[in-house]
Length: 343
Image (cartoon, rainbow, N blue to C red):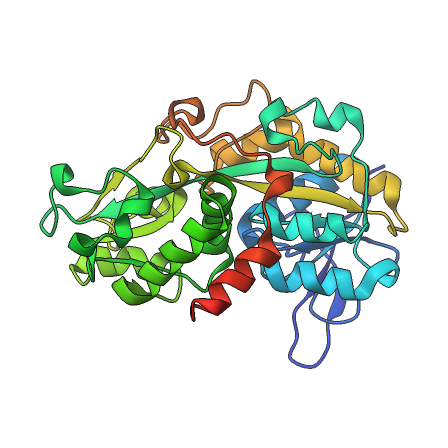
């Protein structure tokens, strides 16, 4: 008999464990964690993580709790916790944070059957974690400020003098740092450092992807580098933050066509290793991947034979650069961005 869904609800002083029926529950854990439950450290979007967690609980009866953070801080936390980490599963928005945890020797190999549920291009060469979703780099632009024919041919061209002061990005965020990791992987350290210097002197820095898109929509910037799903989410609603904009896809294996993988991994120190592997197997299964196409996530499904949201251009049409996600060097990116005065 399936156990009833249990949750940890946020409170100002401490977290309390509450048993709930099948509707209206939250999986968030903000205080002490219950060692009897499967613990997920998630840097993924809360609505997507909760949907996966709830469906997994309903299907298996395995109780789940989630602690949220951003990619780099949560990855660093797991490394600091080491073998004492209470986490069983780590979910990221972008792969560099997962690679950081992997290089610290803290991930268990993902079961072969789970790896086989996604396309081979969504499995790092190490096979110690697996892609669970994908997002494409795009250039959002305001046609009243710049015409399509005037757009840069490459992401690298944004730092040319003619685009000075005309574009923006959320340089401090994990999303943009992942994009820089693709620049580093495809262009090398010298060109990346030069490009970052141009960004520092010629771009407007915004708090996040949404702020970047809003700035382009209002005409404050002519262009902005973001991930695709922010635009598609707003387009599906009232278009308040994107109604005056269009998207440009660089394609041609340009670093600006980078497709970033969200990753899922099982901690080697997990006290619920079998259940953790079951969770990753569910997330990458057709059932789990359908969540990406049937909710407002607007991220790409990576499961074999699973359709993404029909509003999105097909993933295989984006002509993304071929990059082994295991090779993306998050720490080096942070070092270069810090030297450039961006972090």
